[in-house]
Amino acid sequence: MYWDPQMAAMLETWGEDNAWNEIQLLLVGRTGKVLDIACGTGKTMSLVSRLAGLEVHGCDISDFLIGKALERGLARDRLLVTDATNMNYPDASFDYAYSIGSLEHFTEEGIIKLLTECQRVVTNTSYHMIPVSRKGKDEGWIKTFQSYHNNSVDWWLQRYQAVYPRVTVMDSVWQDSLSLGKWFICTQ
Image 1 (cartoon, rainbow, N blue to C red):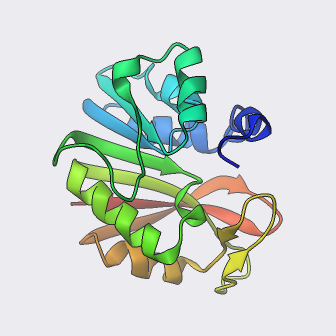
Image 2: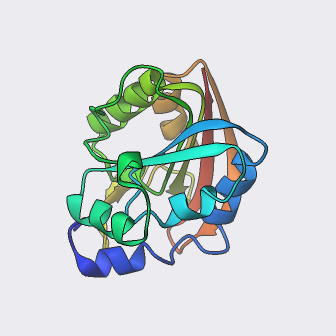
């Protein structure tokens, strides 16, 4: 799916008027290196790069999507094809990181591996926006256009708190018929 042109087209608009505005607000006034985990076509990177004082990098498992980010004009030396559960970056490479609508597509084991990798490569704070169940229940693995975990805030908090000492949950305005968006803000 992450090599599908239709998926790439969808990634160009889905965060408008919600998550893309929110990540810019969360990062405004920050300085340093930032990693966009599962950056896709680089659309969010291009928005965040407009904030003064940030050097934005991105990684994705899909060489096709990284190719789209290059076509967008993002610098090759700031993009990496890598598996987010085993990132090819040295320890403490970034000051901040974010992922938007990505972690819910990983396996349960993959979620912990990604968060562990994120903690390894980021020295300060990481921001993760994911959908949680509107019902507040652990609905498990939902199969729609993209299969994903649609579980409660508590289910997600257990995963984040297994890796991070401080996790803050904040509402996102993103929503669909099954889920509500939540930001999980993880501090070292």
